[in-house]
Length: 412
Image (cartoon, rainbow, N blue to C red; front, side):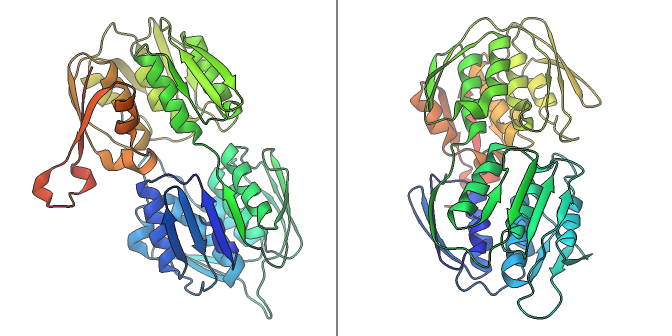
């Protein structure tokens, strides 16, 4: 959606989920002068009349991904003013890599009173200039921001130690479909040759590998055989390998279809790493799974320093987890018990839903505003698979209750 800022013509995105974050991003783009129309899972975006260069704080503060607009906006307008972003409280996630990269492309960047001011000085069209950029860490956000900014820059840009996640490849393919010249996406070196402008596109985004991984874990933790489609199995290599080591069997039935056949759960150690390593977004769901595995497991979180907030909640359900620094030591228990719990972030909310499906008795989960940021109709999909869960809204909030007041009640 942020990449559509680069194009002054119509852009159509297909396979767009209905999520809170999608709606928030749409509000941010609309505030910048873009026109958006949605029909089912298709989103039409037109940035022809992009003139506003400042994103509103009240929207950006709720969504970290909104910071992605700074690169395309700077490339199109030569100026961008974006507040420092918000989102899940799972770690610092500073924007210094973005800022240093934009400075390497010739932008002046200053941060004052929580606002990032970026502009390209000089005469003429105020275009960014190609540069060689080395990222100290293979940040997905920085890689994508700088790749988008470089598409309209003068000359060639090289991003070294770039993130290799499938989402980076998908964004590069989207930009290429608009006429950008990008090669190397999916490797640690991406080369972008700037072009004067981009053109209209009709593009289908890839399936969500984290949602797919969550359903694979749902099958394993409830001892249920599930078939998932459409998925891209290659995007889930590390997740599938770990599931098989824990005791489940995962079969690729076709190029876009996976089947999980559950088995007895065994302990296993996990360390989160940038792609192609084990994804940090699957850490919480796998922790829920390992609470019921026989033996002791250790999960080491290396990507975000504050992403173990679900541990106390899982322990409330009878799990045996101890935290030491960025390590969680999990001793498998025979059974989890239903309890009232609170989701602390997006993936923690999914982990609690999974734990609740396997627990004995009733579990009530609060904090669903996190869940709705990254999962479309999760409870409806699980209900179709036979899960006993329902969403309860606090009617005291009126006709449109705050999402934060929503609860999911699950009965094993």
